[in-house]
Image 1 (tube, helix red, strand yellow):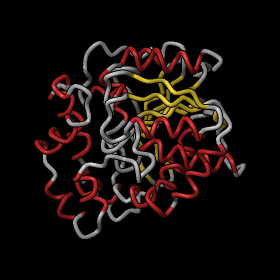
Image 2 (spheres, rainbow, N blue to C red):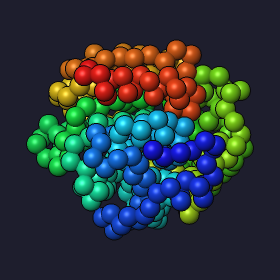
Image 3 (cartoon, one colour):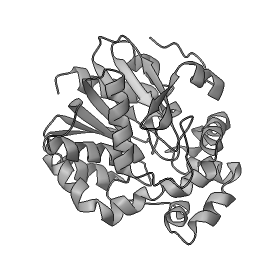
Length: 298
């Protein structure tokens, strides 16, 4: 079990994990829990990092092996310049890392941006090319269907080539706090200290410029791979949980309902009054709902 009684600083979080060289990039990963326990692999969201899950990691790791990494461009992992940051590349890195750690079968937990990576994994699974068996998947608050998502102004600015460089350079701690607070069901409940850690993780090591390059995933989801990923959702025949805060202004409830309809074997679990980051806002309810699904035989 990983014991984190207090909010970890960036240095604390780094001390709990390690760095791995994966496909030419240095990735930060935490591998918690017993190695022979059922595995949960986690894909975090945008624009944050694995640190999003600090409140729930100890409970998850009591009876599970939990593997969570900062994807390229995020957190403590490498943020190379002039790199495409395609969702397909993110899937390549996740799979290569899990294989290097000896993960052969796992439940996939994905949030926000991570859900786009999850749909690419669903596609590869349907095509018979997934080296890690997915026992099931839990998808958490995401604007997964571009035409339905309540994207923020800053997201539109970051995704467009003409405004992307300026929006990246003008990003500030104050604007970050303002935009993040709007994603909570109860904005006043979010601590400045937590947002400051997320800002530190995101802005370090060329992170402000990486935000623009990472935002290209919106175009992938909007049209480049839209048909590919929507078909992959409909083809995912393992047990699936749609675990959703119902006050999310980006991943609106209608997205959760559509996901639950289109995933062949899905269960929809609501977290009432919760916004875009359930693992922050309601860690106990989030963990209970997740483990009830993972361990309950679906």
